[in-house]
Amino acid sequence: MADLKKGARITGATRDKLATDLKKKYEKGASIRALAESTGRSYGFVHRVLSESGVTLRGRGGATRTKKKA
Image 1 (spheres, rainbow, N blue to C red):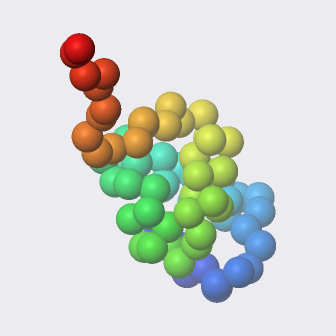
Image 2 (image 1 turned 45 degrees about the vertical axis):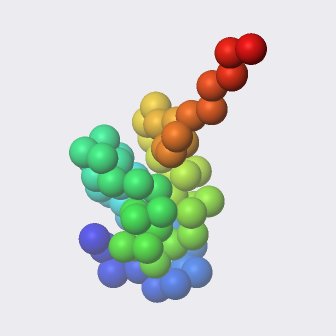
């Protein structure tokens, strides 16, 4: 991962490279939270970069609720 200073604005080619790296890792199964931690960026930042790069975001994990049959 690129050497990113915490809170530094990331633009241009650096942002494009980061977006490509994040996209590859996300598509291999990494969570947004894991990517945020590994890059030192916020969840919102990673989410936004993935959305901008055209990734189809996965639904939330965990058990799904079903209606109880009466």
